[in-house]
Image (cartoon, rainbow, N blue to C red; front, side):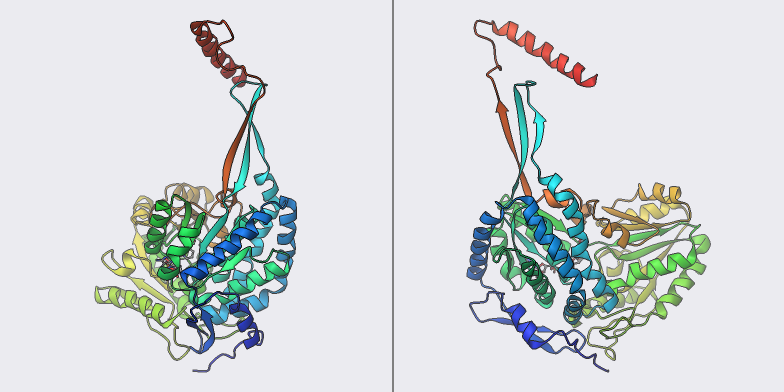
Length: 520
Ligand code: NAD
């Protein structure tokens, strides 16, 4: 095994500076490791409940001032931050790679997500946050204004698979809306969000407004949720239930972005070359650790052998490697524990009768957490890989006879995060997309088009989530709507001396009149 040399930008000085902002009064630490080698990079402080309460107190104090900044002035910070994030994309990618083990192509793509989110809200936020006038119950003399008030302090709990994107991108609209943020990244991948926050501060984000606490989820989660005014969670469906329950008890809102078992339906008129390229990324991108990646592919019986052969050949020839350059097409899984989980899904499938068409093995010769791109056939619902999320470079191929059957099989899952439909005929593909139960559907792509369309809300249905990120909803969810209503003259109720019967008659005919006037 030839260990990749750690990137020059990831110095001990940088690592110490980054973790210094994580509170940890008990002195307990977590050994954050470089995935390709398993070597300890830095001791990450673990935050106690008192540390978390302090972080919220500091965030709350900073938020009171920040909320008074005009929106345009807040946006200036993000305009500068956009440039800084893009200019420092390579250092960010270095940190993402050392802590997650993903390949460089994916790491650099991840760095683009927060700037893309910023671009959207830089264009849109002023309009979204401006007070909106609405008519009152009595024309002219009454009216109401919808005022958007920040929630206060937003707690964000982020996973390891896109640590920089989920640590920063969901915080951006929260901050723009006038909130403070306390984020809890995964212990394994705290470095890139810490670096991103330091760049936001360099761009002018007030100190104290964006706090970071670290620790194991069950240790940190309860105090974080109990102190937050809103919770944004990205992670597994199992943890999402725990978060949602606690937020519900506290009567605070939450957005839950959870797991998937994402299907792809390939129609019989597909262009094989384009499909193979798009699907290879859609299945194996980020070593299969993308919530929206494809784990089930439904192929038409009439072209099954041809499509299977083209895809399996491509999968078998993917270049796997532990390198900090753009060479490898596939990187590592995040940890040996996760590698074992992925392997257990393949072993379970094989034990119950599935066939491995390519891959299927761990690759300790490349690094401690590598696993081969794997294609299975003959997977059934009683197998782990047949019904639960594997979250690794493993996909199952199925053959279908009719499109109705394919749609039924695609929908036969508790999840509903992402789906993909491929066809040479867009109208045909759109008709299929309309019948798939999923928060996102990509036509002639696997996942990236939907995720990168920042103007449309993106979230899961069924057990894949509650609420959405992106789009107008992705910012407005971090606000409360305050209804400020004005009555300029006391005109409601009977006039002095008017009988109540007469008043009611007049009121009811006014209702009809107002409706007619609006219709015309
Ligand atoms: P996870 O649920 O184990 O952990 C996610 C985060 O929650 C981590 O920071 C973890 O420390 C924390 N956590 C764990 N238990 C907690 C608890 N009891 N209270 C509070 N916090 C707790 O998920 P994971 O394995 O880190 O991430 C992979 C999962 O995330 C996959 O299921 C994937 O599909 C999902 N995911 C979803 C999206 C989306 O947008 N829908 C995006 C990325 C990942």
